Image (tube, rainbow, N blue to C red; front, side):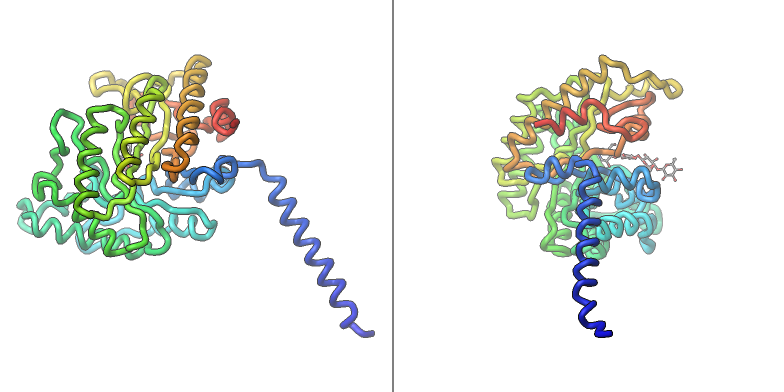
Amino acid sequence: MNTHRLKIPLLLACSSILFIAARLNREDKPKGLKDYYKKYFAIGVAVRPSDLKNNQESSLILNEFNSITPENAMKMGPIHPSESRYFWRDADEIVDFGVKNKIKVRGHTLCWHAQTPSWIFTDSSGNQVKKDVLLRRLKSHIQTVVSRYKGKIYAWDVVNEAIADDTTFLRKSKWFEITGEDFIEKAFEYAHEADPKAVLFYNDYNTEIASKRDKIYRLLKKLRDKGVPVHGVGLQAHWSINSPSREELEKSIEMFSSLGLQVQFTELDISVYSGRQGGQLIQGQRRQMETPVFTAEMEQKQLEKYKMVFEVFRKYRKNVTGVTFWNLSDKYSWLDGRGRKNYPLLFDTNLKPKRAYWEVVKF
Ligand code: G3I
């Protein structure tokens, strides 16, 4: 039999089956946040390695998001526990998940006052190091980490939370104590040298409070005027049911955009308790973990706030290049560590969309 004559129909049949399977596969998946917003900006989520190993969580991530940020794995302490040792496993798992699934990866964070390893500020005798030593260590850290993920991480939170919450300008961190302001521009220069294509962000919170916003603006204008390679501002967006207002939010986007910076909302959650920074309990109020229920009143206030902020994000689509949620669902939130269970995200404790989700995707 002339098998050649069979080949073409067989090929056609196989390709049709593959095509139908691909369409079925695509069509039977519900649209996710990333699909609703594909013409606006990337929709991301902060992840832990365990999220990627759990089928329920990883499926939700793949269906809803097109960007991921390591919640802790790339911070200085976890990734560089001693001067001669790096711990790459967790960060590599997250980056590999992103690369394998064609999901963008944001690096977080290269220089922060928190979760820094104890060795970085002290010499072998236990004395505090001088400015030149600390900057040399910072350069080595940044160039080692950024080079490892060059071409895989598209954006970095280079410096995190350097502005003070009180009436002073810069946070009185060890970085500031030892190097003055220099650690900020040096961090950006080191990161840019290591990966000239990476988009470099300054990241901070409470950026809708005028006094803090003005100081961040002052810092970023100074850096931009000096030609320091800072390309974007990360507004963390740890908000609550009663803040920010629409006006505060629009003012922040307009001010930072006027510097020619990309704007990203890098750590979005909306606490169901009133107050800034997620309405956490202040130290004195902490008792053993309270587990208040997620009431209908909380839900209504939260969905109104989510509806408003996404209306503003879409209005400023030309300036906003990404919105990342900080944690995946109400099953776990960093805010739970503040003494009472919180419900700040769009997916509930069973990873199902809450009413607020449908307010975000209905436009
Ligand atoms: O990994 C250790 C574990 O070995 C140990 O047994 C356990 C108990 O001590 O601690 C674990 O480390 C914790 C780490 O999260 C990983 O779970 C730290 O104690 C804990 O402080 C750390 O909290 C993180 C926090 O940053 C640190 O300040 C939160 O998960 C993380 O969501 C939060 O994220 C920050 C952003 O990076 C910057 N913007 C603010 C945001 C919220 O604080």
